[in-house]
Length: 328
Image 1 (cartoon, rainbow, N blue to C red):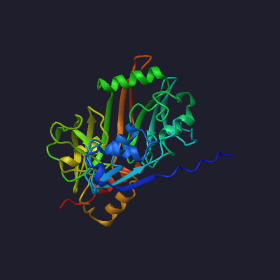
Image 2 (image 1 turned 90 degrees about the horizontal axis):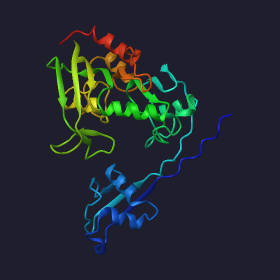
Image 3 (image 1 turned 135 degrees about the vertical axis):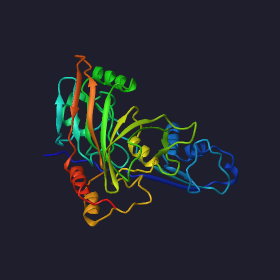
Image 4 (image 1 turned 180 degrees about the horizontal axis):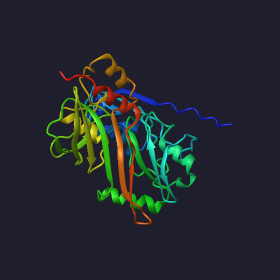
């Protein structure tokens, strides 16, 4: 019999108006006085992730408050230090004593986060290989890199701390090869290119990323190549040189070609053509983005390992349909 999952702790909500005596006080200091059990470090994190708004807008932790401003803070319960293993089936592509390569389905979150405490790849991997507990961190056991919830495809996990350290070092050196295939809106021109634009958290949304202003954000580089042009869409191959959150989705949207099915970055929402196309897009279960290729050096043997995951049916069906849609 499965253990009962304890009920999630409630989210604390703080709403207050800044009084005259508090005018000029830093936001994080002011909030800490009202939430003494929440550390200043966590308060800063809450501010940075958009859980604290002043007069409905995001500000920095160092923001100097003014009398009359309305502060609304959302304080989720802190994440548990350890996570529980879950008996979730995995599509294992390769496994030995050091590494685990999995083909992640769209819809599965890589590791626990806000609003997704269970049903993650990390919990499934922990159930599959209990020895990864504590490798790389208690809340992300074995996780070397991640894939977005709506993205499918290949991901490597480390089963030992040595493997974790070696693989993360390979990522830092940009020697891990990650190849993605995606369907995007519109006709991408030119046929090949490099998108070199910094990425940062969107100033107006705690769940979106965006191309940062000059001097801000972290450098992000995506190389792309057009594979096939279709009716109102393009099949594109992308190679990551860096691994920023939502990198491919943000970069392609920044050049006017968001990934099909991406409701976060395809704004304003585009018309999806005929009814069959619209239906296939609604059935993607995520975005039309797939991590098709993965290559790295084995952390123990030193051998070059390469893996391939064919396009899943969810994307192949859409691609097949678009090939038969006449161009305007």
